[in-house]
Image (cartoon, rainbow, N blue to C red; front, side, top):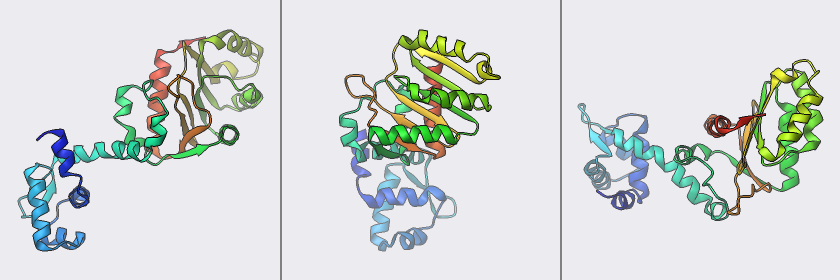
Length: 251
């Protein structure tokens, strides 16, 4: 069976719903029919199609169970669903700066919300920094100098900061580090690295995470941001940050 044939077979809601129904465990024919409100002939037909695709299988007690390949296929579908739902956004935003191993995990972004408005986003970011109690990691294509006093205050209170900026800011960042070096805990609680260029924006705090993608000219879009506190979304953002942190140079 080819990929196109698989997608065609799963294009019917009934077969896809049946796979999801069996995700939690095996069910008998009668239970499947009742739970999905299907006639006997329709349930039998759908089970036969999914069995032929090796997406489900008959188990010892006579019930039906999703197969390992069936479970794997389902795990990829949330990412496809997310991209399709927000296809207008992806028509104007470039995902090429994101490593392939994170692209295939786009389903982790499913519960994130889209926030719009440059001013609204800036205010939201500032409030997230203020509310952070343990850590704040950020990757940005530019410095918001207005936030520097708040960062200094937070660092002094024991909050851990990690930051990634373009290397064009290296001289200015070094000067800032030197200026506040005498504050207790400053050098130990803040780490900064630089990349040749930063094309994706990421914000990570113990309150939640945020993501900004670039347009197709390589400029980060500061007018639209994905935000959320769902564990899967936050793990995804952390992994993107770590990927770039490992490539960045300490100042």
